[in-house]
Image (cartoon, rainbow, N blue to C red):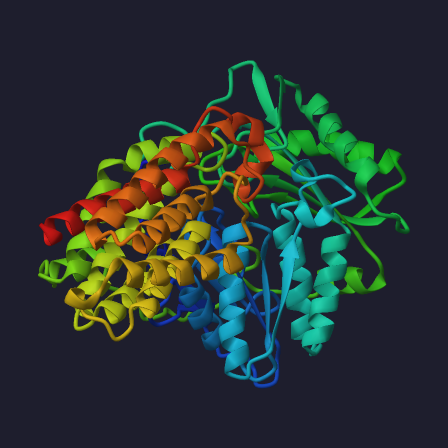
Length: 563
């Protein structure tokens, strides 16, 4: 069980400790939860920037150094880093030849890295993206683009880093990484769940005589439960799962037996003996074997088996030297640590204001804090259980930012949206950030006394269009859109009927509450929850519920202001 740190401070504290311990190799990016190589990337070299949520060490920060990544950005536990954090880290690593982004195929990462790539492009910095999709348990073979990235992250990053180190241009580095990803397959098993920092219980448990096959790396349970297997039987299960999936080659492979955080190395070596025998019997020749921890899941008990089918180029790139804290480590220069302010400190430095935005956001924060555990419980049904924590982080940051930018409603909401996305991370962070910022843009130039229900309805319409464009969700996919769309519709109808702001907002909020409750009958088609869709049947969508809580709390404030 994880006992050190709290959910609120874990990311900052472990990254500070990491940068202190390995300052001879890496340095922190000012103003960001990211690290880059201690020495600047040489001019004209493609910068390989990787990232994802923390809890997976040595992925991602531990893989920064010569021969591997130039920079890594980390989000909160099992949560994607925000677009702002990605952008700052990429800017710190980039040296004139463009950026290759590499990360696992998760919605939050796709959204935030995608937003950062757009911003770089607007500034004339070219980038390409490789989505790692090695996990055979997370999608069908005929649709590999639907699969997630697990331990294969390490192998793809190693190939990309070596290609960039030898001087390939951006197109060449991307081509090498894409080839590696297409030739990697991973299958895993869990013996016990992991525990989030500060939590008293694991996200899920496994029976003493059971195993979960097909687990992910975010604390999700597997897709199939089986009885406990011996080391040899476990090796057979893993190899039998991978062999039918492996692409054709000349027999040369890289084998990675990856520990998830709690399984001992000695136990993995026992299992590997049989793995090697089975692969050799299938006519495969492991040129490189790695047994250890490369992409973990906090303190989860379990292992995964990855195989990369080599050709001449991949064999050369994988054999190329690298020097990182988590894979190979040298050097002796201690970095200067730049400790950053926490949101607690930011809030302590400001006082609740008298503006309607501050009162509304503060009420929304209080509602989310009161329901944080329940939102986490709903999210844990088919995902990783961090929605409540992420919403609290996002709202706290949003309130602090709005207080600093309180001169106009538009400016306060824009600042709140940017801060929410940065602090919350994940898909929800990006999507709520867009809603807040775009609503603010729609109210530009208006003061509190000037805003009518029509103004609000138009601003919300604009925000929802941006939300749909970014998230690609549709009504019925069991996402927060299933609560947002009824809210938008009723708000517009109330405005057209001549209702005042308070009445229109409360009616729309009531529709959102009803719609959120009704999502319990839906099956998710988007995001991480879609993989375990049937488990969520009978439970409302956590994003829809959090949205209904927010708009209900805001409605109570608006009602008081109007009376």
